[in-house]
Image (cartoon, rainbow, N blue to C red; front, side):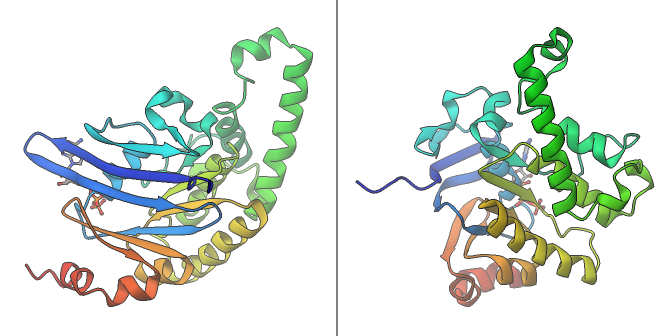
Length: 256
Ligand code: ATP
């Protein structure tokens, strides 16, 4: 028997009143791949991300992660299952330092919460030590060392986005959901992001699902691209296949 894909989205449907935001969407993500999720505005990309992080309930269909249905865990259990995400509108503590923000991301995964911390159990102390070491590794990987003590609000937007990345990486996800990582970045920063995504995949053996409007970035870093339009999947294949797909071209040209 072959191993199941890391992520298996099967016939997922989400309705908001009269709008079908996702209409029987199915696709699979193999471990170790970078998969781009594209589509014009309103195609359903964010809705799918919100289903994957259990922020939205889906009325029909199934999402399995490592063969296990997502609905078996509580929404707050998603991080410990191994799914991490970033947000389009950064979810950072703006008055805290870079290091504090990355550190706090780690508290959502481990048991080193405020209560167990107060109890100071030996195993908790070891876990805290491991978390601190991991924070330094993530800061180094993201080249944030020189600004580790800087308050997030004082940093340029591109750097803030890397902190958001760190906040997700510290949970040690197997699957990282990136919501428009290139949004608002300049040309140079997009180039650095491409290098970073490739480095993260090879060094951390991470699987990445990426919602992105920056086509050049998606087509250059993805192994597989899934295209949505009006809640329906219209293409799924290699970047070259999806770029050449007639329905994708039509969706982007706005022809109806
Ligand atoms: P964008 O690229 O603009 O972020 P998207 O592909 O992420 O678009 P979604 O945000 O998933 O698209 O929206 C899909 C559809 O579902 C849209 O018609 C949107 O208006 C609708 N929608 C999304 N969330 C809600 C909600 N909470 N309540 C009602 N309608 C919603």
